[in-house]
Length: 507
Image (cartoon, rainbow, N blue to C red; front, top):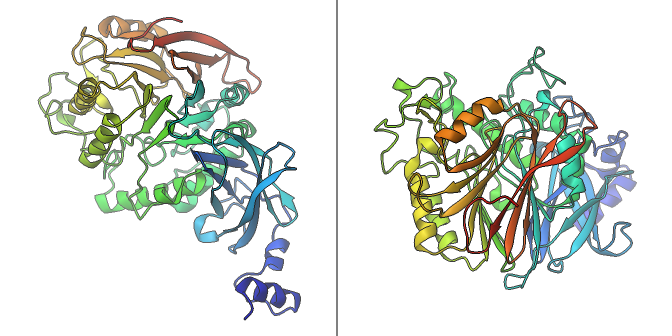
């Protein structure tokens, strides 16, 4: 009995191919380069990694320039950049109902190794990407470099930070949200424009990702190392939480929008099948071990959170510090199921360094009039306390929170009480392009919040984390001018956390 693949091949050769798809017709529709948004890898395990691409011939078009047909894509993984020593290869199908995205979960690789990969479709080949596998769970690892960032608003600048991030040769890239911005472009504030309408449905979210991903510096960062990703609000709608945002949409209409946004996010990120969305639900929190050196738990503080509180007495996002609703002990920014999951991941860790990747500034931030924001952790202080208590009670080794969202660099201590003993340490990595805050206003914030030891809001860039068994060094890297594609970068500040000694110290 002939195989389906053999039948299709023979039918195509005889001119009898089925109407819904043939390799020959797919080839004809790929006269233009379909790899306009690059390649990526992510989710490394000791024996494998996810490879990603999405077929796009016109990143600015609503349909990405693709005909509504299936296309066969070939992939290969090699031990060398020239792809002469191929160790794994195969085929995948890019389907129109999935945005012509391809997710390949490669298995059978060796632990703690570099690999290179490429996709081909028709007569076209993608760029070559570099990736790596994680070490074995019990491996005695001596070093790990993580580059992390967030908030890359297209209109606000160029992606020079991504070019420098790639040049830093990280083992992992951690992206903590606001990969896209959903609002229509504002010509009065823009350096460069994305579409003039809001992203509100699957077609417009897909277009927004393709528009961003066409940037060569962002492509370089994706091709440099495997990524671990988490969303924030702008992948859906500004300041959304749970089943509502700040627009007048009904719950049902908002969840329809959220479902479209989640589907587009899945299509455009190097994620495993286990994270594939079902309607308006998408399981994204997870943990990664890097031998015995480090564990990285990444949490979702948008999808499961309780609703905003104290809106009746709010000025924008700012609410009184002593608002009773804010202080309710059962309120959660993570949701109970995710909190229980995190408690298990925290309690059973054997890692020397334990990182919490989350979207924003985790520590308390009062403004000078004493108010706090109801959109981040300060709107849910009971969750923060439970995490810190778990770190303390489980004697977790070297807990460090990494964050984004606030468009500023921050370094601070995490303690149960203001002025109390540091239980953990926090580093917020600024923004890739999104505008920050004047340093003059941040100087006042440092005075009101003595647990915060450093703040910089006028430079844009990313954070670099270098980990050894004895110390974790965090370097804030800022581009000179985010409005210059060729901007140089410099170290803004560096900090060291010594093994067993939490708290911010200058390196």
